[in-house]
Image 1 (tube, one colour):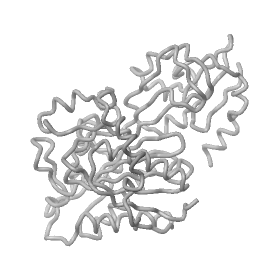
Image 2 (tube, helix red, strand yellow):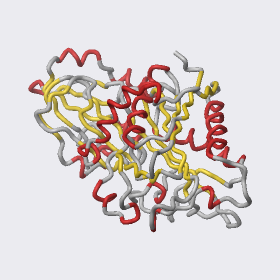
Image 3 (cartoon, chains in turn purple, brown):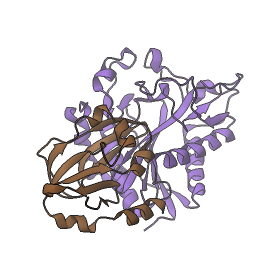
Image 4 (cartoon, helix red, strand yellow):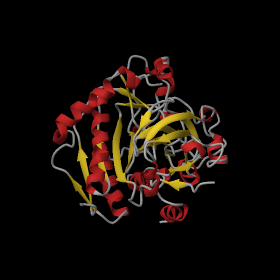
Length: 263
Length: 124
């Protein structure tokens, strides 16, 4: 039992199936350790991750993301275009104070990011639902608004209910653990069209700031650990590298067209 | 009516006349999931083991497995439920039932939580 520690892994870029397989194993790691764990990672090429039950045909018929590889997540929520984001997976045992209800872990991760963005000069807040919210079933995660999403006021503009969303998360609630996927949009993804070109932190910042994906994530994981009074431990090796045979075996399920096309 | 039992994963099970057991998810679980958007149910005839996933339910934020509280064969499925998800919140222990199982071993019910123990679990 190492529940007094928050292990954080920085993984190398990988393809969608490999990342999804590693995250499933991460949930088992949380169970084994009896406490929260976080994996931060990127993607070898721009990729669309589809929510657990989103319709594949809807993604395939969206011209804005045409041609991008698609992987289906085990978690819920809307489709995310990865490539200019910081992606994380966090897992906690259901017995942990953050494991009880979906909103609890969601708020814990997002409140920590709001604080960190504030440190770097962003006017960030947790979204409060309003009549101006877009449809909850929009294809793209960053076109949706849920209570507790991280939104940022654009530089030089008054705060509005429709301020851009820069971070969203979704969960897979397993038997004894919760796996939460999330994405912080660092910059507009230029390889997509129309509705998929959403403003990220780079476009929303005012004066030039001294943040990087790494500095944001370092402060964020430190704040997450502080929130439950445990010690963050950045791991010297990658999570995927330490579980190569298991990740490779599980990745085959996420490459299987029957999984991707399950709905 | 026989006593309802609960799994720690928030499914309820109620023995019925004829040896069948009706299964659903608790009011606490439905409320914790918030807005439900999709549900996938198993086919009739599928055999499940206690603790094995028999279906999935998606809310705005989360996909959750529905676990079989007892082992057995699924003999009936509430097929109207995926199109009337609001029923799960309005009547979780009645019209919101999910499947009926023919249990392999009725003794498995004995290890599940009674109402008092389940209430204590969700308050802890």
